[in-house]
Length: 118
Image (cartoon, rainbow, N blue to C red; front, side, top):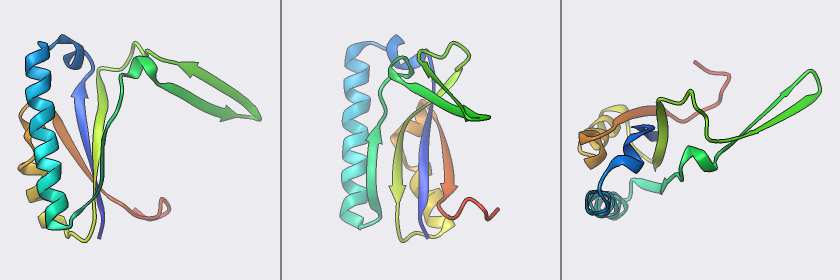
């Protein structure tokens, strides 16, 4: 099975921390990803840029609406993700529990699969 670990971050936190804290957290996450890669369970991991640089696209009744960020209503953002492969739910939970970001963010764990299955 595959799981996506979404790093859910308070929208105001990323820009509100001191640069040395940001660097230390980044280094911890890079080291964590390296360990998962060595174990053969990490397919991909990326940090996402600020929602201020995001764009939302909707198409309703044949009309496309494009809205550039920032999105004022966002209290929590997806700060990044880890795509885990060849793991069961218990192993995915253990991996998420050991993620350094769990100390300052929430981690949402989602099984990857067809969208028409619950």
